Amino acid sequence: MTDKIGSGQLSSILADMNRQGNFPISVLTDLQGLPLASATSVEGESAEMQAAVVALIQKTALQTTKVNMGETDEVTVFDRQGRRLVCRPFQVDDRALVLAVMVPRDRSYRRLTGQAIHAIRHVWKI
Image 1 (cartoon, rainbow, N blue to C red):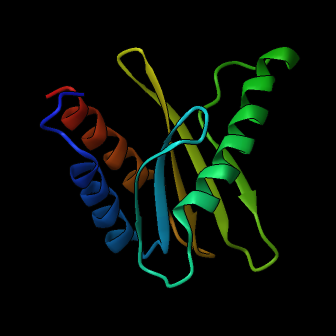
Image 2 (cartoon, rainbow, N blue to C red; image 1 turned 30 degrees about the vertical axis):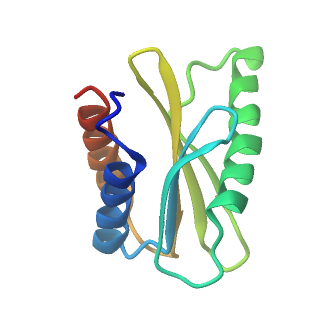
Image 3 (cartoon, rainbow, N blue to C red; image 1 turned 90 degrees about the vertical axis):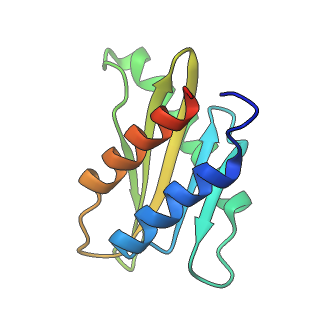
C-alpha cells in the first residue's frame, strides 16, 4: 500500500459495506489483530475489541492446517441473539489480512464482504 492510500479510504469501503448490509461494525486487521481500518454505526461497539476477537479467531483458523483442512476461507462465531461475527481472511500481495463483520440475524453478507475485499485489494495496490 502506498503512502497516499490511508486508513480513511479503507474505512470508507467498510462504512459503505456496513450501510448496504445494515452491519453495525466491521474491522480490517492484520493477522495479529492490529486494526488497520474500521467502521461502526452503533455506539459502544469497539474496533479494538473486535480486532482482539478477530486475532483469537484467526489463530484458531490457522490451526485448521493441523487437522488436514485447507486454507481457511471464513470463520464464523454466533452469539445467543443470532448475530454472527464473520471473519474472512485474504491476501493482498504478500500481506495477510482479515475482514471481520458483525452480521445481524438473518442478514446475508457474502456478496458484500466479497465486494469489500475486492475494493480493498484495489486501493491497496494503487
